[in-house]
Amino acid sequence: MGTELAQPRVRGRLFAACVAGLVLLLAGCSSAEFMESVAPRSLPPSRGAVTVTNLGVSGLLIDDGATQIVIDGFLTRPDKGLLSPMAPDLKTIRAWLNDNRMRAFHCAVPAGGGTCTEEERRGVSLVVAAHGHYDHALDTPTVAALTGSWLVRDDWIDEITRASEAYFGNAVPAEAWAALRSHGLASASKGSPPVEHRAGAFTVTLIPTLHVDYPGVRLLRGVPDVGFSFPTRLFAMKEGNSLSVHVAHPAGSLLVVPTFGVPEAPAERLRAEVVFLGIGFAGWKEPTERIRVWQQTVGRSGAHRVVLTHWDNNKGSISAETGGALKPLGVLRLDRSWKSFCALASGMVDMRFAPAGVAVDPFIATTAPSVGCP
Ligand SMILES: [Zn+2]
Ligand SMILES: [Zn+2]
Image (cartoon, rainbow, N blue to C red; front, side, top):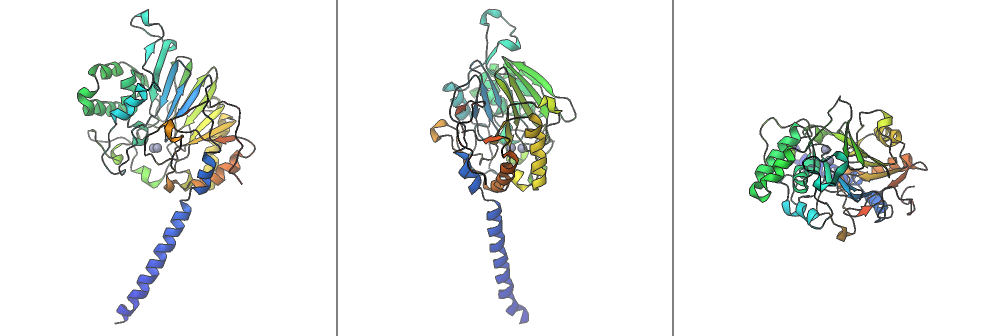
């Protein structure tokens, strides 16, 4: 009897605790202040000696008008739930070639025969996945195969490449995959020194980097121990090697840090005018950790500008028609990160965003006011 009387009260408390927890969770996950700053702080569409197009998440298309570099290039962005099977979407990836945003690889001296020096590489000439997670590497081998590019490879990227070839069958010509097998570039792994490649006027340096740590990502470390095939699920696409990418060009240098972690290289290898910094799950870190990673990336690079990436919801096609707008991934607690980054950037670094699907000049002089920070 006593137990029965107590039950409604217990249930009531439980309900109240759940509501309070939900309110706290939603408050902790707020991204309103962050999102208010995105549009006014976005770099304007612009042509410079080098342009960068934000491909969503941490993906970038870097272009000097002759040679193009693709980092990640997660273009499929499946709309279905993250736990549904996924595979690269050929139509979406081909659209980037069909409208000439990505140009097919060719040699600047076409009559030169079989050899093409690194300096002569034109069109998409280097494709690299920052690591093996689906939101980075799902489409990378297919982008490289369809463009005829060179691909940064290790055993896990080779496995994703094999799975992509098997999945598409005749839909992608066998010659494209055969060419890709002879267009491999060495990757960098933890504990190893940075690895440098040339492509046209670009020098691209791969730097081992610690992936941001949070409970969910620990399930995604390493590489799969059994065979891998498409369609697949999020949890099958393991991290493999995590990289940052330094891109040097006569027009200026960029440091791309796709995950909120520290690149394993001395400061002189990180020097850049602009850092593209992935901030996913930074909001779950202690403020001291946000400061540490910022100092180890933006601080050590000496950059005067930082462009924040890897905060969107990974869904929906990327196109200039949507005005470059991306939707936030609420669970990232972007407002918490934003407060820290405002304090860190204040008076020191120009903090910006890059509109999705739109070419911008990363080195352009600041034209928009720095609004949104207290
Ligand atoms: Zn990741
Ligand atoms: Zn990611």
